[in-house]
Amino acid sequence: MTTEDFKTPENDPIEPATAAPQKDERPARLRGAGAAIALALLALAGAGGAGFLAWQQQQGMGALDARLAELDSSLKAQLADRASAASVQALSGELARGLAGQKQSIDTALAQQADALRAEIQAQQQALATLRGEVATQQQALDTLRALTGRDERLWRLGEIERLLTAAQTRLRLLDDAVTARLLLQEADRTAAPLGGEALPLREAFRQAMGGMNGSASLDREGLALRLTQLAEALPELPLAKFEPDEAPAAPAEGWWPQAKAWVGSWLHIASRNGAPTTARQDDALKGATAQLLDARRVLLARDTDKARALAQQVLDTASPRLDGKDARAASALEDLRGIVAQLAQPASAAVDLTPAFTTLRALRDAPAPTATGGE
Image 1 (cartoon, helix red, strand yellow):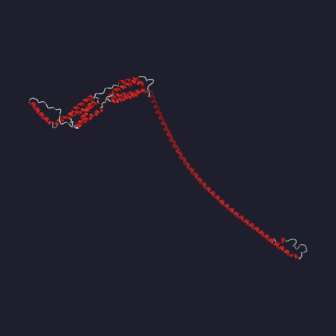
Image 2 (cartoon, rainbow, N blue to C red; image 1 turned 90 degrees about the vertical axis):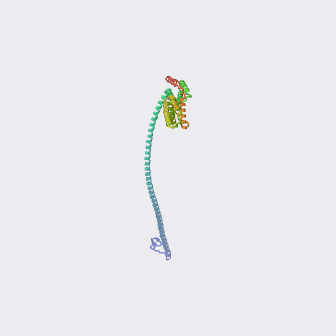
Image 3 (cartoon, helix red, strand yellow; image 1 turned 135 degrees about the horizontal axis):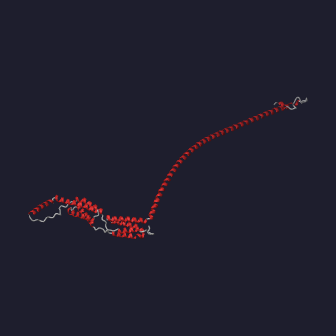
């Protein structure tokens, strides 16, 4: 754009021929300078607008760069988050696989324990079933026994009484043991008590038999036999007396031959006091006494009390003058032998007859059972 573009019809030279007077040329120049200034200002304004536009464009580019940086940061953050999420997902997968393995192991162990527990429970159930069967068998046997005893308790008691009565009779007749026989009869009486009134005659027979045993002492045959054996073993070792009292001086005979025999006999008698002949005769006598003690032991155990007492008395008569009574052992042996003879010489206890008790018991067994008995 030039100054010609800003021309007006007034300053155009080709316009009407009438020209302005000479005095109007300066203002025209001033107007041209103003136009130039205006044009310069317009150019300056255009340049300013272009700079402003450039500045705005630059600001826009800065904002765009900042936005791009923000987007890049956001993208990187998202990528990092995605990587972290992937690692977390991988870790979660690994953890899930580990948990699955552990769960499988636990399930396997629990299954094995459950199988073992089932097997143990089954074994216990089988053992319990076996035990129940045994208990049932025992209960059945017990019921059978109860039925038998409940049905025939009376006969059972009578059988038990007979057994006790037989034992008492054996102790009396074979062993002379009145003490044990009395205890057996007392037990039989206690067994008969629950039978009530029907057993009164039997219990009265028991009381009569026990009354006959009161005050009777039993002879301890075994103990006496042991003492006789000990005496037979000790008798040969006991000291002898220093002289033989059984020999008495013979009456003087008439004639030279009896006197000569008497003289020779007195000489022999004097010699015998110094030793062997008298001692030999004493040993033979004590050996015979030892054999008599063993015979007394044998007949005593065979229940021949009188013969045993007679043999013991013979031994006492033989040993008393031949043993040294001053010796403690010999004196003790003789005293023991006298005690044995005294025990054997005691009168035998009156024989207790248990026949009435047996007769009453058999009658009670043959009688019918009463409708109401004295029960336990």
